[in-house]
Amino acid sequence: MTNPPSAHGAPHQHGVDQRGVDDVTQRRHRPQQPAPTSHPRRILGIQPVLFVGICLLAIVTIITVVLIFVGDFESQASRVVWTVVVFLAFTGLLALDLVLARRSATPLVIGVAANVYLLAVLMIAIWMHGTGAAEREPWEDDLLFAELLGVVLLTILVVRAAAAGAWGLITLGDRGRAAMARVIGLVAAALLGLVGVLLTLHFALDAFGIDVGEWYWRSTVAAIVVTALAASITVLLYWNRRNIDWQEAEARGEHPRPATRGASMPQVPGQQPWPQQIAWPGQQPVPQQAPPPQQAPPPQQAGLLPWPTYADGTPLPMGPDGQPAFPPAH
Image 1 (tube, rainbow, N blue to C red):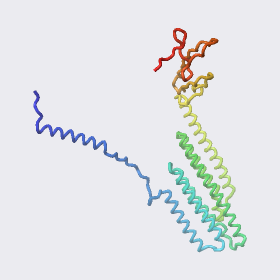
Image 2: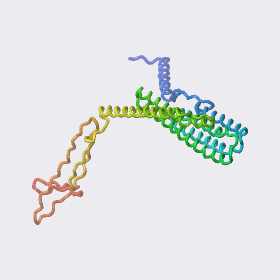
Image 3: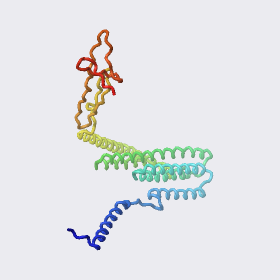
Image 4: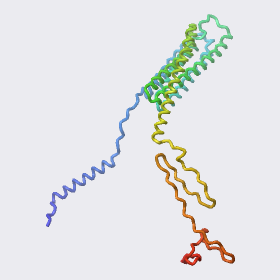
């Protein structure tokens, strides 16, 4: 005989169980809080590197406006045209760097540094070129437009090519996954940037009336040779890493071998193709069993009817008396 449950104990126990169930249900249906993520630094909602480029563009614009009111107005038409072209090129190249920097900040840093140098050299070459002459002939203004065309195009091509090559060398050094590859990749990228500077800096020096000597060009050629050496070593270290990865994957059996793939088997006329099984790496191929041959009907004799068959053309089995065994009629 069991005692009846207490009037106070049963509701209390039921309340404890119900609250426990409610807590579990709330925990299950409670939305998970996202993990806190670190937000990159922004200056007025703009990336710091991009903010520096915008500020530099504004400063150069102010200086250009001042030079328009101070310098010779007759020779400023070509300079203003090429200044606008440089501003458009600066904006387009910086937008391209922002697109390339969606996964890595390296192209944006390199691109902004190249664009800042590009803007400085071109503004000096445009607004200081030919200002030292006391008197200018009318035909010299037309020649100035052609000279600035060559300076602007050559400077943009050389500087941006050096920036793209530096980014590629840094990427190859990182993919080499070795300390030596990363260091040599950075050194090669720095040397390539130095070559880009030496090939274009003389435009700004000539605008100030500074004549570069023979040693300047000797140093430029020497820098090109050393850069080619560092770039070649970086590329070789990258392919060395690729070769090592391939050999390790081959040792683990991750590369399928042609011998293990299903070979084409000749098919007998009138026979349905039998599915083949492909042997995956590390698995022995299982031989396929051919379907059992059907019992051939006895040869027809003269004056006898042909051997009966099913609707699909399969011949009826032979009974004990040598006659066809017809299926029972339903």
